[in-house]
Image 1: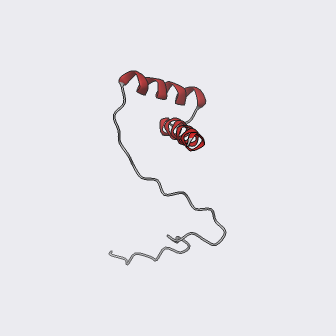
Image 2: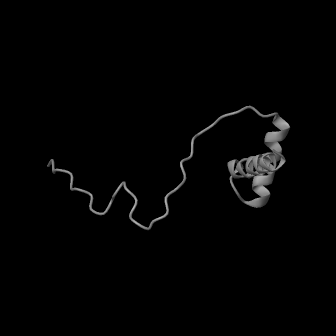
Image 3: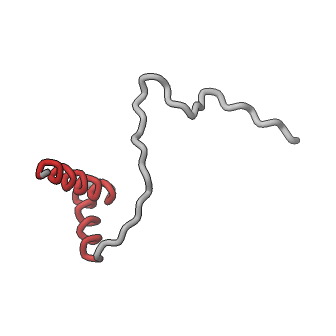
Length: 70
């Protein structure tokens, strides 16, 4: 019994007015020394966040200091 798929109601791919949208995130890979990776992971576990959040915060602080120094 082959039935046609029912249309999905209410599943919109465009955000509704007033809903916050997520910032565009691009997957990025780099190389770090093994001990630094271990430090990032340890910090993430201690703070109960994802490792990329630790790196993002560190880079934001770094770039903010660069702007102040310029």
